[in-house]
Amino acid sequence: MGGRIGTQQRKTRYKYIKHYKERGKIPLSQYFQDLKDGDKVNLIINSSIDKGRFYPRFHGLTGTVTGRRGFCYQVTVNDGDKQKLLYVHPIHLKKQ
Figure 1 (cartoon, one colour):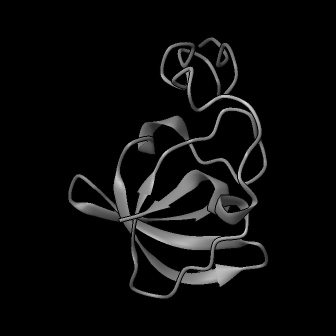
Figure 2: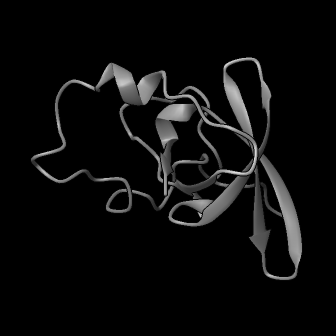
């Protein structure tokens, strides 16, 4: 049985590319946004920041904020028939 080849970033070359108008500095309001429990958020990875990034499978999904852990938020996501808990930095979250 072979070992796993590659890292978490494999096969994401085109998945994380930003639009040319979104490149450049990151707005501080997005970096320090304040979310409350029960808020619906879109999980979209900001490729320029590694901190608080989640597994690429959940990129583009919608979840619910259920709490906070340090700088990151606890987000519950439905994955098929299961609920999964992710810890995500606010830079990768967009409020609906």
